[in-house]
Length: 349
Image (cartoon, rainbow, N blue to C red; front, side, top):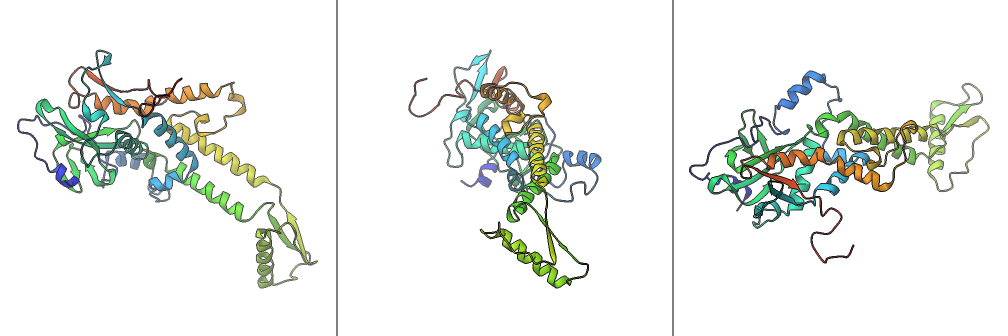
């Protein structure tokens, strides 16, 4: 069955209509106009980010963003979802939380990974579901690629431009609008720094300034020829030795550029950590000397785990609504198995 056909399944007679977003009025960032965009238009003037619409691939080229994203995936994607009642795991767990049966479904790990990527970069994700008696979800919960759906301000859900019954969809908003909508300047700065590193690598330091010993001793064409020849010599494996004619004075600049680039890369890491609600250490950034305190690796890891609630709680809250699990039930990530394998051969502590 094609995914389009899956969405065209007729709703079960007698099902009570409700919003796919659990009461939230929102729209996919891929729609033409979103409430988020209206807010951004008030805060940021036209062209504030140079008119560049960055993609996830662009953002992942910034090492700090890749590191922060990987921390979130590392801590959450593999954690099972558990249905709780009265503070303890329910005796009967919904099968769709941890298992997949249809050919359309991907593993729970891949589903959560894709959903977290949606939250990180676009601020919202959506799952496709089927329902049986009493509005209960049956079968699998399937992640919907974000570029194939939209949702208008009235809660009407569209897949490939066609309306889909709301009871077949769960829209899960994140705690932030997504990096592609609020961190354009940071992404742009990170990409610029990476380009600067590559440019510096192509033209090794120290930088050389060529000066005429006598004014007007050579024409533009000759000067450009010498600049090209010396630049090429610097890229040569034997570039540490070169010949400079008597009429040219070669000045070697100090190593100031590397210090600036290193500080800039560190600043980007700290900014990205702030967007992700992570510690600076979790993305390998250095804090200011005046703020340094003694921390072990275990302490830093514990702090990172504590901050995962920023990403896990929006998912837990949406999956705990009464249109997903019975009233009084709560869905939570299981962190008890974080440092122990949940599949495969058991190992001793």
